[in-house]
Length: 354
Ligand SMILES: Cc1ncc(C[n+]2csc(CCOP(=O)(O)OP(=O)(O)O)c2C)c(N)n1
Image 1 (spheres, rainbow, N blue to C red):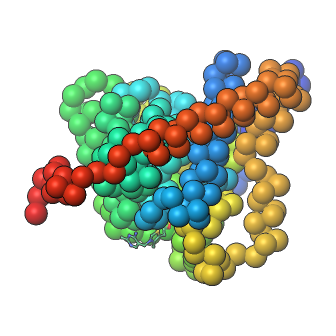
Image 2 (image 1 turned 30 degrees about the vertical axis):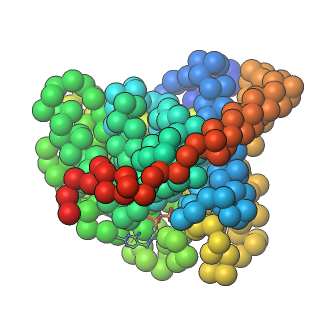
Image 3 (image 1 turned 60 degrees about the horizontal axis):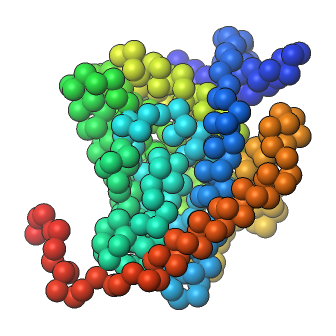
């Protein structure tokens, strides 16, 4: 089974049409599924919120206000937003060590997120988990995860639960190209395929696994091709095109809800930020490569599209949206700073196994 590629093109009437073509170039069909103008503007707002949240987290980390580790997702925002915009609130996801984008796209509270990064009692983990452990079950966000590939079996269990409950729910695993080399990916996708679990496996192929180029660790060029080994569809999509990601996810969600089983979607994207803050000395990528991908920035592309082609947003609206987002981020920092640190005597609270 060859991976399928979804390409976003325009037909003569300037409607968004996604031409679905096989890897060998043969045409498999078209589809038309545009989110409403309001929903598209909301998608842009979410992407920019992720960007501004992380820029602030990075600044505050370097200023010494945030402890631990912060892995930014800058440049990959179209993946989280494109997929989560195709989900319902009760659908469940798990994330990675690079989880701020997935949390925000699923609807997490900015104040509680920032407070968690700041290590404060009002944070999602009462200030004791930090960036890599944010979870909010009320919105189906089952957790970021510091263990590479660790979230994949967890959310596959959520897919099994949805199937057993018969509630039509879908479960989504976000993971990197590096994680697709790990055992939990293969074990999970195998059983999900066999049991036709309502799952989406979303590989965020940002071309590098921490500080190693994916080309040095992947035996294939396309992670999506691995789907063939499990008898499920493998889709490649431009991970910097939020609408293309949304469409690929929408098809996969429909397939999952119809009981037809999982889909592996590989989003080709790029992390503009370093692997983690304060690891500049280990940066192995060339500035030419980073600059090339900055030119394909997913937020700039989408905003320009809405302003220039769709006419759904004016430059002034875009500026106002950004101002509102910056105010919300500042409010989250104010909330965090005004919150107390956890008390030392609470160190052993909420421990379920020792
Ligand atoms: C099981 C495990 N092994 C190693 C690490 C150290 N580690 C942290 S991130 C990372 C690379 C992950 O690469 P990828 O899945 O492609 O995600 P990316 O960082 O590119 O977003 C590694 C090896 C870890 N956290 N967990």
